[in-house]
Image (tube, rainbow, N blue to C red; front, side, top):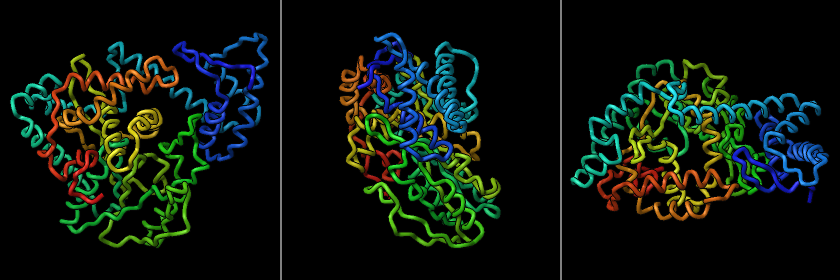
Length: 449
């Protein structure tokens, strides 16, 4: 064990000093610029630790910022300027995000450039006119026996968004080669993709999926944290160069051999699938990172139609604050992972900081590139999540309170628990259509995923 035992976080909390976190931070920055040498990252982190341990105070506890300063120094002095730049940019982005959150908390009038304000206004206007712009209003309608009406109204609004996207694709069908359907985790991409494909087939067009999950790099090349949790959320976990080469070949009318990724082994297997593009077919990319510039950088924007999904719920809670879209998606992913992947929802919560970090860096900023934005939020969905999830969140609220290593998990658990406690629960979900986007997460869908 080294001499330094603890580190002081920005919040002032004292947590154990873990050199592996430095290694992972360096490796993550290297991955951003194409580096994959974990041993080199470990060697550089050891240099960082050695510098920190030269401090004359035997009880020295460095602040997070001090450690980051030393990391930058070591990277630059060892000739890793590009990695240092990626590390500095990431550090600056995190600082800017914290400032933005502080600004929002003081009710500043500065609008975020990453929010589609025109679309938000339309969704809010709809919510007000249907009496579901507040939890109180939703509860009132449910108690009045209008739950089935809320379901019908919500599904109709979503269908209009899907139809508008289809119209946009058809208007440009002569120049398009691919459709990108993207959005953050659990925004409803799979269901929406199926529905768009169904409607396009009625007009003689077909979407052919290029599954970018098959282009993941081998697991041993992915960043991970001190808990052993791999970061699959970054677009740099994908072989972006190979994706672009294959897309270029497909657009040119040539055949490519799509790789196969074995998730059990964490690496690409030997099998490949031949793929070509017919005259009535469009390449479909259904991916978290569909709008990330590096994913399709070699393809002209004229050949792409870009659709962005997000549950843009416009509903205020009892505290007067709007419900967080990320909390809706967190609950959706917990339910889906439990139903389809036998994945403990607590693991989903603990991993969510990776999800959110990648969204804020690589997904949300690209919303302005979209040709169409689809709101996948269903105002009726939260009441049916209560009996499924509330007890979990109440337990996590207690479990993580005061744990400096799980501050993010506590913050989310506390916020969701307090929200769900104020809502009118609905246990019977039989009224929800079998092809609803919500069925993607709670099960019982008639669609084949």
